[in-house]
Image (cartoon, rainbow, N blue to C red):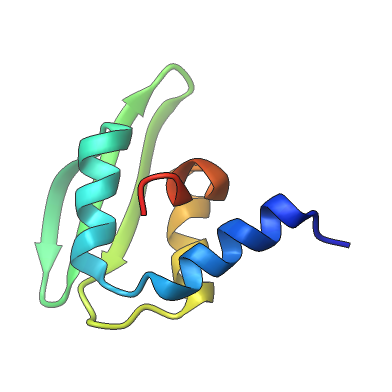
Amino acid sequence: MKSSRQKKSIRSLQQYQYGEEVVKILCNKFGFQITGRKESHVRLSKMTQEGKVGTVVPMHKKLKIGTLRGILKLAKVDIDKFSKYL
């Protein structure tokens, strides 16, 4: 069963839809850099103590919640921390 905190952050993510804004938050708040772009996708990466971490963000106008969760999972960014910047 999901806690009320998880439900709140999931609701915040459901209202969040733009790929461009996801890129801005990951770069400005979590230290990622744009390392490549191909058609409608942007590749982001950063170095951590464990090694290089990266993710790919589609620059679509609307991102589905599952797509956003996948982006954050690859980036190793906690949903609760990300939702603070929404």
